[in-house]
Amino acid sequence: MTPEEIARIATEALAPNTSLNLDQLSALVCLLAISVVLLVMGMGYQIARLERRVKQLEAAPAAPAAAGE
Image (cartoon, rainbow, N blue to C red; front, side):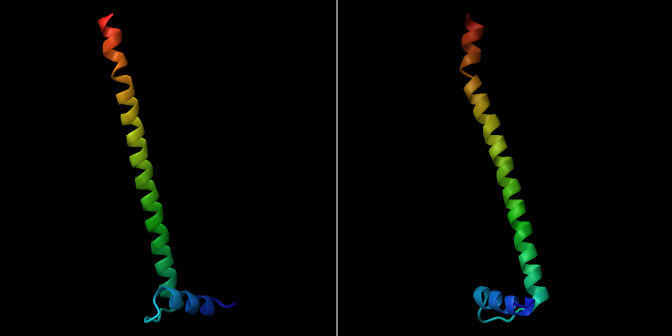
């Protein structure tokens, strides 16, 4: 299967009323890959932030009890 055939099949699946050439399809796939990477990085950042907050909240009840003794 040639790259042109793959591009035609992908174009028909993604946008049946639009014709994309191989360069446009490559740019679209590259843009989608970059978007996914940025999304995963943002989610990782939010998860790390949430884990730090949960650790702070778990440690908060123990701190006044230790100080009161």
